[in-house]
Length: 559
Image 1 (tube, one colour):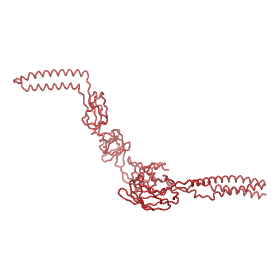
Image 2: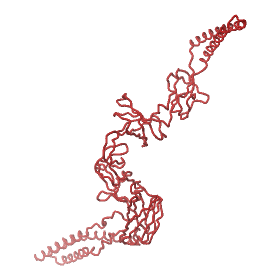
Image 3: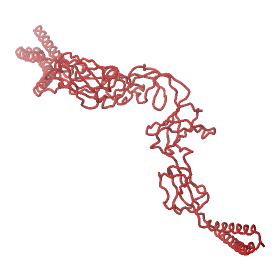
Image 4: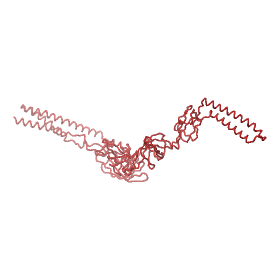
């Protein structure tokens, strides 16, 4: 009986191996699919000297995205004519830079050659492209959602696959238990129970091994194309960004060029009024303020040179009043004496006793005494008028009716808003042949003209004055700005906007090259500061390529 037991043990072991192998042979990832293409919808690209075009076929409609090649700006208001397999058709403008036309032929699999004629701005260009429609995209499957029947069918196959895998695992476990029982029965020389257990084990293992023989994995992996294309990062690190996404992110590009640039230094500065078009109004003596008939001028009110802005009435002390009264009495007495003298001289002058010269001198002396007397009266009653020294706008006011103004106190500041300067503090020597600009906190750029530099240090810096050329609307005196002045130092390289350079996760500086209509490739570069708006790329980028100048930060977030 020993050979029989050994043969039974070998048979049970073989069946256990078959069951385990059958279970693991179909341990596949049925949810995996072949690598996806860059875009799920058929598309064609075309490039000319000035335009870049992408045509996307979906649901029997050809959507055309037309942009300018250099800047990636959408081209609106163009006339687009397409030579299709169905003949020549005019595309209809949908919105800015997007055009569409009916294309029922795009649902047929195969290669479709297209010719685009674009007329914009008085010039016409011809672009050619090829639309390749795969066999999976047909009349019933081009970009449309699967029907309920096909969804049920695929769902049933998915449930069947999961159920079969569970059956295989169960068969393996059952085979192991039954095999152990068979071995035990044969060891106890019970042939009949052993035969029954062997038959049961064979019945479980053989169907499980054949459970997946008839599965059509190619049919299961076939999925309908997506409804829309999504931006994605490809395996090589480049980005696929569809044209609609580029429009949404406002991606703009420019073509690089190598040149020699002057290094620029940044200086702190602030806006000041032009000294020749501004002035202060101050009181020469202390006194009480009073408003003119029209009242004090308001902030922002335009005044002309010589306009009275306020009055200052000097206070008169008690001692001064006593002195003034005494002086007035003396003048009144002298006036009375001179008047009596004139009365006596008049008849004598007619008789020739007194000369006419003596009479005239008496009259002149009387007029002088009266003027001095009236001046004393005006000192007590007439205030000092404060007039505008220049024409301009009231920029500052510190006057209140009844206020006691101190001598040399600033009451009004007048300035001309159209004539403003910038005062910067420089630690380097600047000459008049250097160009300079100023940037406000909001990013506004002001063109400056050199006016002069001081020779006395101010906090270890030299003050430099610049004139603001162009519009000065929205600017105010005292506003802080950053002055960017070019130096004589020159460097050669590619100047790109600061917004073009992004920082990668490993700390490297990157720019995105627009290699094709919907593809962007990151390029590692080494940059140096150039000015407030640009940086200088000294390595990692060659001239003549398109790089992203706007929207690089958003592209870097694509995963």
